[in-house]
Length: 317
Image (cartoon, rainbow, N blue to C red; front, side, top):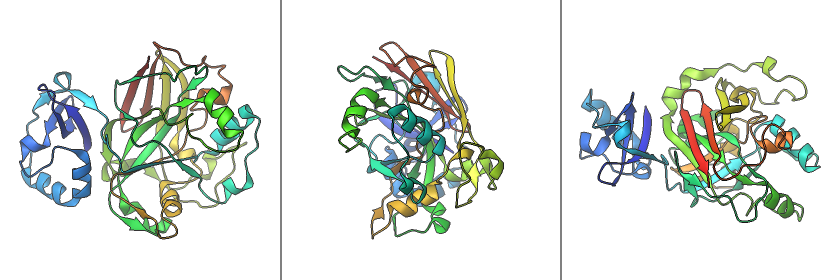
């Protein structure tokens, strides 16, 4: 199921699901269903039972009649990881850094701004005086139930679903901050775009494949933990021109490993928390030192696409 948050023709924020090029308003389908996504996630097992009992539901709107919003506009927290070694190698080289050995021992994350959430076709304002605005092409997972001190091998049932994530980055600001060293902070906190929908975990399972060592070719190494992964094409375009084509299958750390790390030391993951995968290799402009495309400027239209989920489109202003 592809779940969405949207603004109906009256301007009210509602929650529903996609049916082709149409949308079902779940609260119109049943008054027992909520109008916001966080409430749905909190009680999703009960609500999915109600939806199953409804049988076939006729859509209420054409996509053209409504405005898609960020599918989860109010996550409880937002951790972003650095899960792809190729991105680490490329970005470190561009910044003149080396990958710290600890990166190969544990998945590393930072807390990003869960109040700065944008959705499909939202305009993203370039930070003042920023000269190297960048994108980051990521997959994100949404936590569906509470859990602490999880183990990777038991963590998958705690995932509610997946969405596309653009980790907008102000590289010029970030470079200065992280030379302190501390961060990231202001180079990252101005915009986190997700969408266009949340694909439920069960629907994404069709893309899961056994671990394939052959996708980890030089210069990236084979991960120590060889869990299965999604075989998902990941593409970014700027003004209609493709600037990156990657695959989630090349991720070094899986979401299950990330959840184990996040929930260590008696830390509780909550329904509605979001985890970012980190940027797929070559999924940001800094990795090529902005040679494949200049830094983003007002008027640029960015499209991030992940197989099975859809296209997240935003315009820089």
